[in-house]
Amino acid sequence: MQTCAVVLVFCLCSLAWRADAEIFTSIGQMTDLIYTERELVQSLKEYIKAEESKLAAVKSWANKLDTLTRASTSDPEGFLAHPVNAYKLMKRLNTEWSALESLVLQDPSDGFISNISVHRQYFPDEEDEKGAAKALMRLQDTYKLDSESFSKGKLPGGRYNTHLTVDDCFDMGKTAYNDADYYHAVLWMQQALRQVDAGEEAVSPKSDILDYLSYSVYQMGDLPRAIELTRRLVALDPSHQRAGSNLRYFEKLLIEERQQAEKDGEQQQQLASEEPIQLGTYQRPRDYLPEREIYEGLCRGEGVKMTERRRSRLFCRYQDGNRNPRLLFKPALEEDEWDSPHIVRYLDALTDQQIDKIKEIAKPRLARATVRDPKTGVLTTASYRVSKSAWLEGEEDPVIEQVNQRIEDITGLTVTTAELLQVANYGVGGQYEPHFDFSRKDEPDAFKSLGTGNRVATFLNYMSDVDAGGATVFPDFGAVIWPRKGTAVFWYNLFRSGEGDYRTRHAACPVLVGSKWVSNKWIHERGQEFRRQCGLSSRD
Image 1 (cartoon, rainbow, N blue to C red):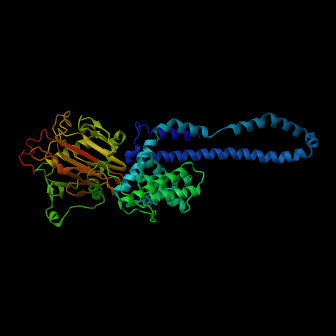
Image 2: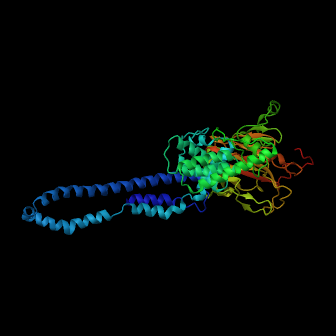
Image 3: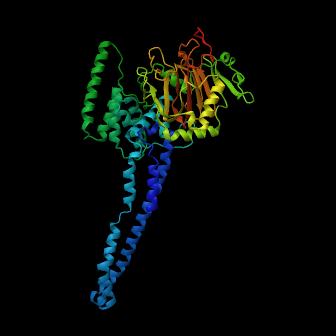
């Protein structure tokens, strides 16, 4: 048990990197929790073993004394007539029963409970659980997956078949409900109800599921179905506090709506639909992102504007960086991904060894990824960017310097004034919604503190393959670029005139299955005066 406790303490202390919450925003850091949980299970098994050993000892005592007391109580005087029996009785009651009492009072769980209590601060908290739940809903929306697909683990590219229980679905629904997100509350409460009706056992009462579902359906404007569900609730639990009053209120509203419809000469839905609630039954509420449908469609591979004519203008070539000495004998392999704006992919940007080293350096330093506030220029977190990142300097390791040098060689642009290499790892449903890399005219101070001008170009290294999702998409012109480990994509954010190319607004689609690692190098204007000639045109 002592060894187990030491192992557990070591394991849990290894999570000391968790200075903030938001563990769910990085799959890379979440992997540590997998090993921690394995150690906790081992510790739990050791505790069970100790409890069983203790119980076996007590049971052995009970059996031995049961046999003894049966003989002694049948003839007490005769039994004690033997001096050895008399002596052993004195000894048992004076010493051995006290030892048994001490054994029973021992609690092998003390060490396990103590470790859990001390190190609970390193575990995911309520915000992590809530964030992970919202991530599933985001994936559900983006990839048009119904709740049943998630519940049964039917995800494209998934290698593990993991199911959601009734209680899991109920908790998902409650998370949405508590945020007044009735659209998702309906989908998940309906799935919980479906599984209960199919006979699955659950801790969550069916009455609670119907209570949440009926009110959420009402909030979605479907009074007939809300009434039908509430009637089911009343039939199941006639003493339910809210059900009766809700039913009367819903029926009153429906009568008023029908009366108003008759006055206006409109047709009104009379009965609740017999069709089961599913994805598409209710319209998803619009949000702050104007190109939401285009963006999510591209993430699914829909609406890609790659025509045969455009494809005919795409080529592959060897890139020697304008006869750069480091590329003469082994030029970079360059492929066109898009013609205008010109986006290229380099096939041999990073080696596996370089990727492993970059991850090794970055992982302990990963922190919630930030965006630059357009008004103040200060870095801050945002709900539309779900990942963790670390910034690496060239002096930290020769590999970082090699990567920086290769970017400079391939692009012909100096990285002296570029930002540090940013390494990012995306978490559950990790994404970065449509954004510009460069600062616009209404945010002139975005990079003022750097003193290196605007972001002229982006060099994006893919450091992992992704099983499903995770594409880089450009909603303005309908391009989709899929992650491929070891490759990199490059594009200019500014025209030669210095004006921003607004077509380069792009997004990192939510990761559906897998762990996505990337590293970004944002190259700035200063120092490029003799490397990329200026021009007046806003077309190149």
